[in-house]
Image 1 (tube, helix red, strand yellow):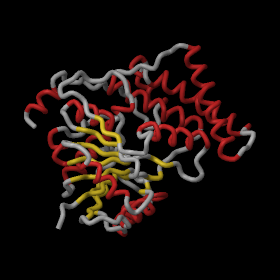
Image 2: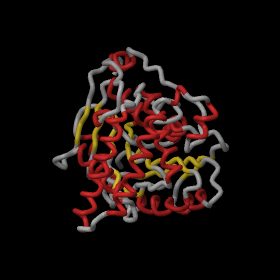
Image 3: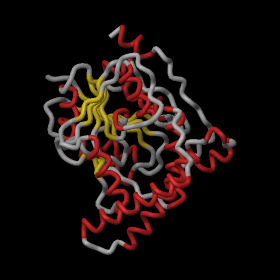
Image 4: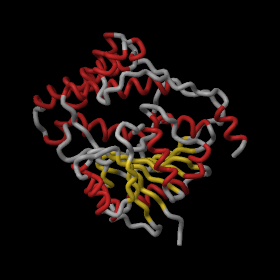
Length: 334
């Protein structure tokens, strides 16, 4: 019998999609035993019962004890798989070969530590969300073939996010051997981005597998959208030190370009005049610009204002100190 593979999910009040997600996991066609592990953070909507009905082992976390990196480390510790595929409660594997394609990524190069796949928008997603997801993940693999990224061991930590550093644990798999050397860090946000940075600095490869897709998209109302981008760009500042440039002409030019691309996308889809899409797109990209500019400067705000701006209601700012030699040390002991 081949090694077990674990599918692990952090969950809180995920009943809307959790049953669909776990049912898709159970339908995976793979010649390895599959363990399903859920860490529940005090759900009150029947999520625990849904998880049990779908054959998952449930770890019950005390309310308030969840952290993005720490909870995923706990899931790694409690799992038995040689590889652990992470999902979120609303990321539904798009087909029965999702897990097999994910695991194939580890065979594409030596010392692959991470494999991840794309998000596909849900059918009801807005044109802006559909276009952003399709274009972003298409850019990772323009030919449709898997992408392999590896950095020089011990090289400097990157100071900005880009395609080469991107990884998502909403649809990503971690090799246990690599995690034992480079675990998730117990950071409040962007734990997956930081894991990719440190894995690559330690000499591990990261693979994008375009055939391992999940259905996963969000259309937030305006205030929640601002707060979501505030959290995202605060996290990027904490992990990379990234600060979004505050140049009005640059910002307005970007909003204009993105709106034009959304309108062209809608017209290509259905030939419509796209007036409604244009208004929704303008709102989305304006809010995104505000969230990115303010979030990447969250260190300058008082805690109460950071909390008010945050979808997670977090008032802290916690920059991660990158040890300059971590990659060289880990690579030397590999």
